[in-house]
Image 1 (cartoon, rainbow, N blue to C red):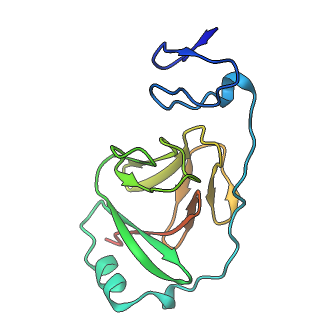
Image 2: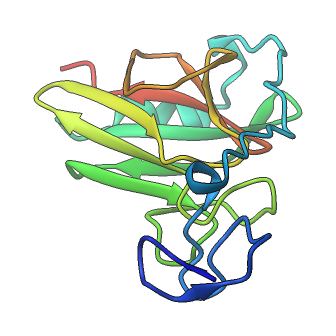
Amino acid sequence: MSSCPACGHELIEAANFCPHCGTSLAKMSGDTTRVIPAVIEEFQLEDLGDEDVAAVDALPKGSALLIILKGGHSDGRFLIDADLATAGRHPRTDIFLDDVTVSRHHARFTREGDQFLVSDENSLNGTYVNGELIDAPTALRRGDEVQIGKFRMVFFVNQD
């Protein structure tokens, strides 16, 4: 039997995730299956509602906002105002995305000076920026679309 590289818990041979801590074992097993393709759907910044526009305009200096899209309209927002924000299905992540298409610890957003980057945390379905699967930390610009599992989000940063 093998053990989890993160917590040391004993694993059954066919496990893709540690049953104790949820760590993806894809690197150990070589499993790189992607089951959620990037959603290619046109979104125009003009499609934002008045509340979303006001939230973007009111962003504090050094912060960013992810607006969740659903059917071409806003379906929630997440403020990123720290140097590190985690995203995933685990309830303790900063950006909690409750769906089986999202890994427990799926992605991370980091702030480096005035720049925000997103990186995938070895998730099963990958992280996409503007429809492209990323494999390294990727800088985000205003209006970039980030897809994590089935969740599509538009990124906005304070303009000051």
